[in-house]
Length: 386
Image (cartoon, rainbow, N blue to C red; front, top):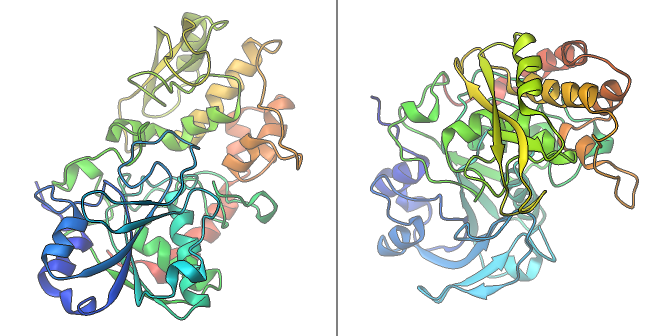
């Protein structure tokens, strides 16, 4: 198996001079470790790097907080370094936070799906650096889903939010460093940005081919198998169906108390979706939707991840549930601005309206293909790896 070296390793081994003697703000969480699983914060400090502030994304600097749970500033008990929250009253570093810093360093493992909020923690920090003449450095890490496949609708600007700020597809096929380059140049941020690249990564690599250990980047992302289905089954969060939160298989199982799992599995298997089979299952969530209620539904078994289309699969699951249980299925109610959370996740209202109008997932997906081709051309200048 190939051993990929993340950007953190390259910084420590060959480029430590780029941060030496500077006051560093470090945007990080528990997923930022060296090849021997040592915390990046500890290793950088031991290497003489002056970390003056830590900035924490959603789930906190240790990844212990639930999705959507805001938190405030604190002091790291181990190092005494102040920790600024980027998932609370502010999601963008303020002038006060940045005033004594020379550079912001970013090192967090992403999962390759547009609605993962770490992307926009990074984007807003790049914006803040552009506004206050600070340098921004990304320590690159692999896209767990590889760097080839691109799928799903491209976000429409009126559906911009913290689960999708820019017009990219749901599955975008870029590393976090390449994504930073795209955001910075294509969308007009224009910060002083540098990416410390991966060593040994190839675009066709899945995470389990990198030789790196999987560290769950958030509480409901326990495995690579979860990340593989997540670009599609996260869409279920925008409905009254359980996406499996509060179970040992979040995003891999889905259902509700009023669903017949056998009926749903049979209908989905008959659809012949590529690379996937569905098995009826029972589960009782201990958190989130249907707390302590027995649910029936399906487990998603990916049998060929290279042909599997997660976004199409997620839309198909919702389409079939809507068909079978139209009197029980609902999209979550819109917010005070009239925006459905489902629409924010998919980046358009066309999918919801299509499902409600009786369109098939296959018909719906054909409408996003033209914009996918344009995105693939747009991202080419920002690729760092063959």
